Image (tube, rainbow, N blue to C red; front, top):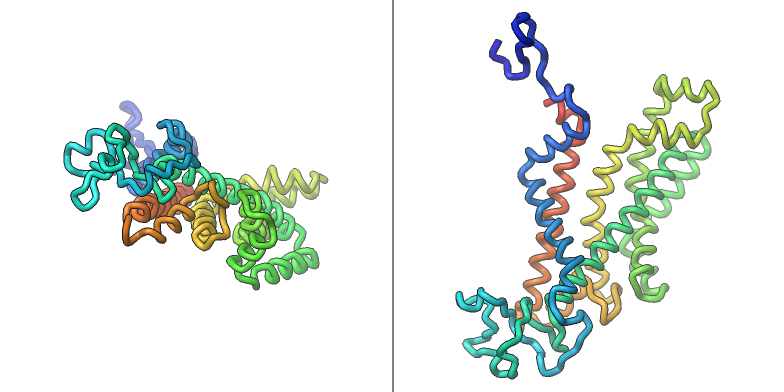
Amino acid sequence: MDNPRYALVGNSGIYKEDSFSSIPSWKETLIIFCKNKGAVIGLLFVLILVFFAVAGPNMNEYAYDYIQMDRQNLPPRIPGLEKLGIFDGTMNGIDMYALKGCKDEYYWFGTDALGRDLFTRFCQGTKISLIVAVVSAALNLVIGVTYGLISGYYGGKIDFIMQRIIEIINGIPSLVVVSLLVVVMSPGLMSIIVAMAISGWIGMSRLVRANTLRLKESEHIMASRTLGTKIWVILFREIFPNLLSSVIVMAMMSVPGAIFMESFLSFVGLGIPAPQASLGSLISDGYNHMLMYPYQLAIPAVFFGILMISLNLVGDGLRDALDPKQKQA
């Protein structure tokens, strides 16, 4: 037998199916994910950006809010690469570092209009954007899963009322809700997170509700109800584990959306207040100087695009790895 799905057991003449079913589920998921080159590359880029977000602000002596008016708008200068004629601190053939009397200093991403180090501000901005996205996704997961489980399990009038509430919230564009709440509340990290959590959980709750309506009619759930098992035990120990793969994928796919929303708010001036930075505020500042100093816009915009694409690739890889149909293929 030449079928690679079967292997000969000793000399017995018996062939045993050699498939993924003989290994733990988490290993099977990991194998499928690792076979997705796009997802692996995306995860690598995400980990690199997370590293810079955590360690970047301490990689040089410049603080993200340290102003040096005699170091305004310096172009990028990186040790080693300057000898290759790139990132050498020159603009239009002029050595700006020698002109400002800082020949021995290096600003990897250059400086902004206030002389602040853009590399440190980029690392700090990436950290803020990731914090907002992860916390918002976690809140959406907790609220959406709880709301969807209760609505789907009870059904009837309770489900009807809860779904009407969702329709009312969803009837107002989320961008309008978030913008108004940020304007009303004092600007800051917490106000953005709370504002984004107001309506971000709706998609999660609908996914969980739809699956709960299907699972609550299964035999093991009906047996638990007959035996008098507490409702919270049925919801979180019997129904929720069956939804875990879908919930993980949904939560992962919501992270890029949260980063985009935070960046948009910062870009229009409703996000993180100065001197704090986020990817959106850095892009906004760079946009104001893009004609004279294009690097101030190009660097955060490029890394923002890489982060968004990488997170989407990781989300797609998780979806394929956790999809039972994909595993059987």
